[in-house]
Image (tube, rainbow, N blue to C red):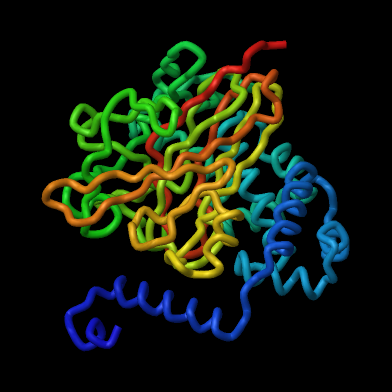
Length: 392
């Protein structure tokens, strides 16, 4: 750190060092979060997300989490950097943002469905969170899809032309497996210098149909897809591509298929917090229901760190860099990518299995969203759906 400060170190590198230093200080002071509190938070927000219309109060949330109001406030501030009510509003507005993109529902109806009875209060809150009014947010998103080459379906709703984003290609079927097409959404090279996550390139990730730990994936061919192999979402560390275009905070794909499980091949970078929430996969069913898989990065623990096994049981993704503690658990496997002959370091991708609680309901869309309040960057390489043995 001293040599970086005295030399010609990049500003972003200095911030990374300082983040890690602060993390070590917090550990030494004994301010780590307890796993049971993390589990309580996960159960709390899962229940809240299923009923965002409810007029939740702090006392209600605390009772549901089996914590006092002051304990819940302290834990939420530590985990999310927000108070419980602020995080509740964030969940409401995030759900509203997705509905604005994926439905033609009137804005007032969306406002009511996520717990805002006053449309003016909803508009003001939405603008504070996302920097745009709900109407502008919806229109800008649909226009961006057209610019990015994703086809748009026009529908008529009460005399107004409504644009609903739809993926150009259907999933590729291979027996009981479906490969979700991510080519139209891909925006990142792995092999061009400075394109991946920092200065290092990430060679030797294969192309086409590849079996990883027994799971088949269809990996994008970078050369055939205009040097774009992964879907990278916006973060505080990386917010624009090399053409100075803003990276997306959220993307959607539309498999329109039944599935018993969904397998995500992904990675992340610049993780500076242990058990850090970096994003989510939200699954929307044809009947209007939804489910969510939060993405939790294990963080900058290293082999030999006594807390690493504990953190890994709460996590489902990890930084791609080899110096981190790389783990596996019941729903997560890692994939070691051997280094190129000109590179001295290997890299890691992670396979996450999400078991569908409603295999008899058709999945209409999958949203990939970055939610990190820190610097972590999320990248998705492939998604495979496994068909249920029987459809009801």
